[in-house]
Length: 93
Image (cartoon, rainbow, N blue to C red; front, side, top):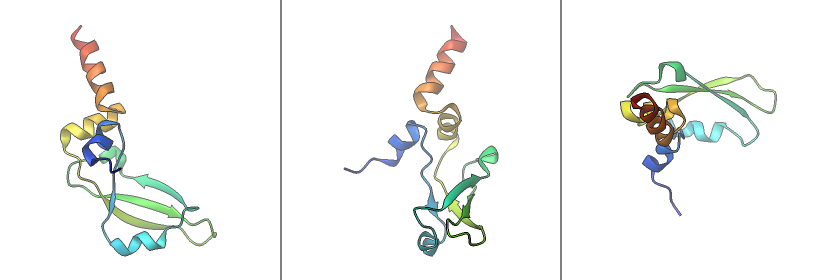
C-alpha cells in the first residue's frame, strides 16, 4: 500500500527526493547518511545529504529536495502535526 506524502509529513517524517536521480545509485544500504541544513529548513530550499560510504571511500554530498510548506515545517519541527496541535492547545489553556 502506498502512503500519501502528506500523511508522512503529518507524522513528522521528512520525505526527500534526489535533485539528480542518478545519485540514488551512488548510495548503498550500508552507507551512513546525515541530513545537513535542517536548521534552515524553508519552503523551496534544498537540503544536503552527507554520505559516508561503508566501504571507507571518501564522503560526498548529494543535494535533495523537499516539498514542505511553512505549516508542514512547523509539523516537522514539533515532531508531528498532532504534537504541534497539543503544544498550541497547551498555550491557549
